[in-house]
Amino acid sequence: MNEPFSWGAAFAALQHRNFRLWFIGQSISLAGVWMQMTAQGYLIYELTHSPVYLGYAAFAAGAPALLLMLVGGVVSDRMPRRRLLILCQWAAMLISIILAGLCFSGMIRPWQILLIAGLSGVITAFDVPARQAFVRELVEPADMPNAIALNSTLFTLAMAIGPALAGLLYVKGGPGWCFITNGISYLGVIVALGAMRGLVGPRRATGVSAVAAVVQGVRYAAAHPVIRVMIVITGVSTMLGISFLTLIPVWAKDILGGDAQTNGWLQSARGLGAMLGAMMVAVLGRRIRKGALVAAGMLVFPAFVVMFGLVRALPLALLALCGSGWGFMVSLNALNTLIQTHVADELRGRVMSLYGLIFYSAMPVGALIIGHLAAAISAPTTVLVAGGGGLVFAVWLLVAYPALRQME
Image 1 (cartoon, helix red, strand yellow):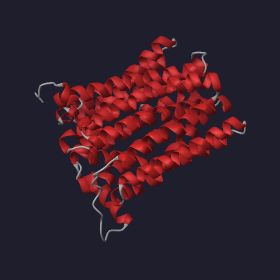
Image 2 (image 1 turned 90 degrees about the horizontal axis):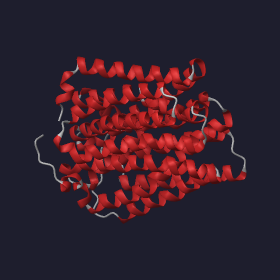
Image 3 (image 1 turned 90 degrees about the vertical axis):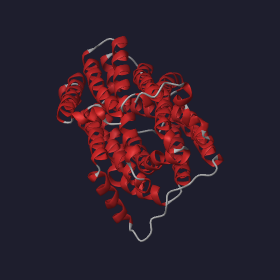
């Protein structure tokens, strides 16, 4: 961990042509994705005035992960991941355009948003395992942690920019323009994937059924001491912590008395903090133990969630979301790197699908609970309960599992 710092090492993954194409394509697309997510949440709250519906929307987007994510991991390990990713981008583009058309026609209804969210979740169940495992095909093994960190930096930059743009566009032209912009942005990834050369896809599994392949991946992850712990941390932290983000439209409209633009600023503040965390890991990741980063993020993240539940002024709310974004991304980035570093290549898609399953199912289940709690005991109290629970879990884990901080 005493490797000297260099800017070359901080951007080592960009020396690989295929990763550069991936990076450029993602930079075009991801801001659009965050525009749609931000506008979709505010739109359903504007139509229903119900935090419960916010929970329903988040659950609809994540529920397919419960059923299909492990299947998506098997598919990712058996077919060319580039082809699978291209198919997912075309499908996502189509449903974004349909959603935009419903808005422009004035026919949009809450049930339609829930249906679109569910279809997006089906795509996500196949896209996420392929996307996570695809990084290994783009760079050399030594540069994989840097590639993961740079991916996270790009993702969080979009998280900072996309919601702010969505807020401005929503106020000026309506949600339809946010959705159509996202639909067009998928072309960036499609073109980048089509331009890649020399990819080495997953080795074909022979004589093993899909069910047996899923079981094999789950057993491998459950038996691996590092991967098992990382997946448990991901699930608990996500359910107790990140689910509070479902209530940001409530905060923007009811707690702070704002509008869609306020909602965009709040989402972007979280993205800014996450971007700073991802950049820190990209620049300093080789000099700091990944386990120490997980520990730091797990403590900082829920502490700022509690702060967010207490404040009633926009500047303090922005600061709290920025801090929570930093903590969550530092922890999540390190968790992802530890899993990717320890997993066997032939099981990478299935293990990453299990990781994605835990993340993408814990979030909507938590969101469903959060939405109903907010309707019953108020949004601020619900956020305090969620943040407090995350903080208790972090402290317990660090006491019960001290070896975490030493993981490389």
